[in-house]
Image (cartoon, rainbow, N blue to C red; front, top):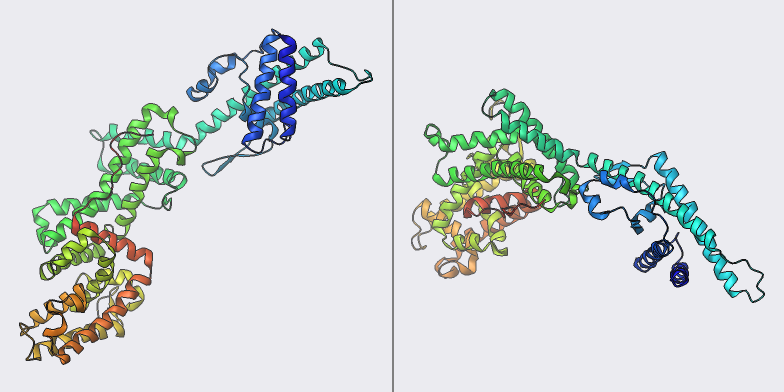
Amino acid sequence: AEPAAFMGLCGSHRNLLRHGGLSEIADEAASAACADYLADIDKVSRVFCLEVAPRSYRAGFSANYRALFPDNSRLYRVDVLETSLDRHSAIWVNGEKFELSAEALQHAEALQHALFGLDRLLERWHIARQDETGVAPGVSRPELVSVLKSLDVSWAKFECSYIGELIAIEGRARQLVVRAVECEGVLRAMHKSSSAEELRVVERRLVQLIGSMNAVANFKCKGRDDLGHDILESARRVLRRCDDSRYASSYATPAARDAARTLAMEVVSSYDGMRAYLRHVGACIERVDPHLCSNAGLVAHLVEWETSWEVGARYVREAALLDGLCDLVSQMRDAQDVAPELVEMFEDCDAELFLVLPRTIMLLFAADPRSKRAEVVHSLLPHRFRPSTPSSGPPGSTTLNAELRALAGHLAKALEALVAEADIPHVDTKESAWQLLLRRAVLGAAKLEGGSALLPPSAMQIVEDLMRVLESWSLELQRHCPQDWNQCSAVLVQCITGRDRKRVSAKFQV
């Protein structure tokens, strides 16, 4: 059995050399050849009945590594070998650089010395086998046994040092999650006995820790860590206003109140979901991958948290903008009564809606530039507003620039002209003229009830001139800052349809 085992080792050694040897484990084929070589080293050691170097240190490994090293047998692994070969490379975890200790590097060097000693011995055997003169020295059993024992001792020392340091590195890498779990536990325990200010301090700390986790783990979004506790406080304040009858007058319509509630609930729900995740993961912290971005459950919760809090930072924390958005939602609901086709557009949420939506927003704004909804346009086109002067408004307020004032004036003149037209059926008041323009903005000229045939050429000219002006503003609304527009349009669709964003699965996943 010994000669057969040794011949197998010599064969796997030659195969490894064909793939570049120990120093060139660069692809799957080379890795497989290395694994075969290590397996044959183990096999020869067992056939030769060599004592296994002590590996009792494995009992102190974490659960994850005990699964990889379940007993005290040799278990030579390619990944351990690769680390010893590449011993000067840093280990990066969550963007932080870690390096092996001097002791681990010394053990890696000793392991390499032992491996290359075996490599030279097997190479000498190959040369002796091919030498027809019989001069080349062969390989004796005692010499092979000595090399294999030395290799096993060196391997065990490096494995102990390397895996031990890796466990420590991974423990440090998990500390963000561990600290968040501990902070959530403290917060939960405080609720019944602590003051509001004490709770606020701990909760602010928890939000900071969530932001830190988001920065290193959330590769699907921006990884923001600047979304503060004030967003959560603003959301809770909005919810209290929505539920308190004393603030009923804060919202002009139920639609406006529902919009505010929807956005505030998104902030609170994502925070509660993050806390629930931390409570669950605290019971199985060893299952958390130290590369935090590799934990699917954590990433899913962070994506939901960042998405809702980013909206909250813009539309919930800023009271004037929230009021403007709620006013716009209310006006959009009224527009759906005038043009019922708009209801289906929002439900389908296809490309047609996103052609109609910016045009309709600008029309609703132009109808009343001093309304709360003007704040939404201000947030999307800030360069079209200028600071108020002492004569034009209170300190800190803004006024429209000349182009926006011209748009509002154009709409007012169009309404007057349409009312003055004697030949337009059912358009005899400013309200009926407004409904005609609103339906035109939503449906387009071709789909307008009866088409353009019902409008005399002079009236058609008035309508289309206004629509061309609106279209240029519609494009600017979308293009000035596409990211802000995309967020705004998504928020409007959510508030008007009442459709929740996709939630993280209720089934727990690390």
